[in-house]
Image 1 (cartoon, one colour):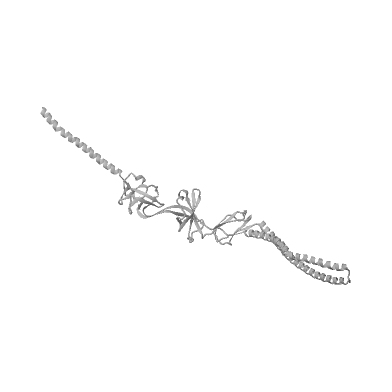
Image 2 (cartoon, rainbow, N blue to C red; image 1 turned 90 degrees about the vertical axis):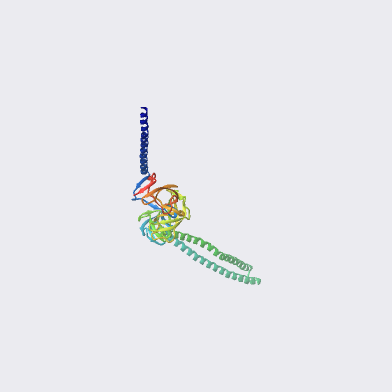
Length: 419
């Protein structure tokens, strides 16, 4: 009995062993199959080719730039203001008109000024007539004094001869002594009168010159008043005072204006500059001498930064750009433009187009196309960037294609299938 039982136990043990090994292998195979299919499903994602943005890695120059809006501004411009209180009676020209220095833009009226001008002109004529009369009087005075001197010279000569004759008669006792003495005294008197008259004749020119200067000063004072009022009356016709274009008029017909009121603005449309409004955060990279491209929406103009305003207004810094003298036909004062300021240029580097959703980073993962239907997630080291391009330092080579659409929700997949 023992022998039979031992034989049966020895036959069942291998069978159990085989059953356990088989079950284990079955379970292991099932786990491996499930694991394979599960991992395959989670290591790959399918995306549509429709609307997918793909760019090619290329070699070229990367230009770091700053873009800003702005306007064309006339370098030579003039604000015309009223010099007197007046009334606007006519707008002769309207904004946009081409003007010369003598072009009349506005006509003003000031009855008080006109009346004052007429009164001062009359006063000037009176002062001038008085000066002319004084000159004639002085000529007459000089002639009269000269005649007086000549008459005294004749009388003195007669007195000398008379005294000599009476001296001879006195020697012979023909005449009494007092007659001779009278003749001598008369000679001395005429000699003294002649000396005084000659002195006065000599002093007359200097005295008359002083009087003339006083009267001439009065005339010049009146003439200055006339000139000032004449200029003010002339400014009642508001002229452009320069070649250019009439940009704006600040007053209307019938409007009463005071002295200093701004009336109009004129600008030289041939000599222009660009004023760009750069964000304060970007202005730190801008330097004088940098190259600028001005876009008028019809043409592009090359310029140079020549002034950076130190003041910050509403979060922006004004940058002045020097433009060439020869400008396209659409260029005019106040034209809105866009400017691109070149900050830095990197030559012959690897580039891709900058995606619209791009965020600055030194390392990114992009999906590189390995075929028309597959893309593999690739680590890429990023260098500098511009408004339109990104510099590639490593991870991609020239000619390779990458997806630049927003794939932030697919970064967990190492492989993409494109259909």
